[in-house]
Image 1: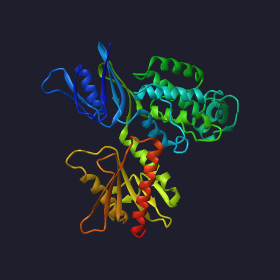
Image 2: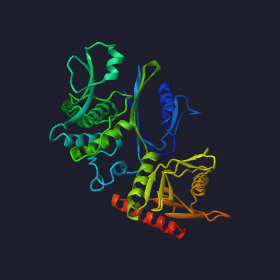
Image 3: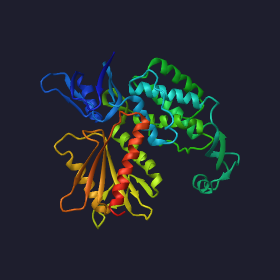
Image 4: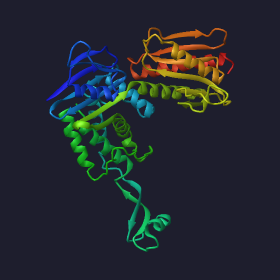
Length: 406
């Protein structure tokens, strides 16, 4: 028997009757914003979703499986746009992934992966060269002399060789095969979509899946693998967000979640980079090498940093998905941005929130020339309008940088 618990991103906590083993497992995952036993009702756990959205299934031997579904506040097609644009701003701008009739994240994503995989494989599996290293009784390719000496101690056979093989067992197909396998294990994939995923796995039957825990093989977008691009981006999103755990007592946890903080941050940084291209200079995402103090012991890592044509910092920005309603808001964000401006020698800094009470607010720091701006992007807009709002934001940033003498 399966019990389904439905939550909404950042909604208030609710009480659910759950076995203690399941409640403790959910608390240990640290995916939810809150998972704790109710102080007044035994057997009831209070659950609250934070910034992570998706689905989790907790199975305990002898106890029903509990599936927790967390629905994002933004529409699922909009979430796909944010994900896709951050990976490929040009390939995803002209169209969104078809989410069909699915309104929940995982069913819609599974449907999208299956459809894109079907389109990618429509003309057959992509082939390419793969480097192979093996022991062989026939010399093929190049002898690995160091390995031959280390492993064979002067023996002539077998020979340690490396060669390039033309095959379908390449990175692109391995990623698709692994994503399809992973989706078939996740909770909440509709039966019709699951059936089609099984068909795609049959088409990829001769492809070696990536073993869990290993790094995904690298692939590069080229003219030859253009038909695979969208399928690969979605597959990588599946593999980055899914996990499986086995815990003591036979407890098994399968989960698939996106952290909306990261999704929003990636989108804002890439969108700002693209919008800044007409102004020249150089954009750096997740900028490293910046320190607050002269001894370089306090590291800073702004989300977005733009250098002018002269190679000096011109604009600094941080993306903040969820406005923290604790008493520390907005102080901590402003303190952080002030540190960036001070270390970089800038007179303006920008905090970019997802929505808000006002589209723009500014704070002039006492006894300093620094102005800290708070901007708000409305994610409920259509993609074209959202990108237009980002371009308007960059114009404001560039204008401020120009007025500061940069």
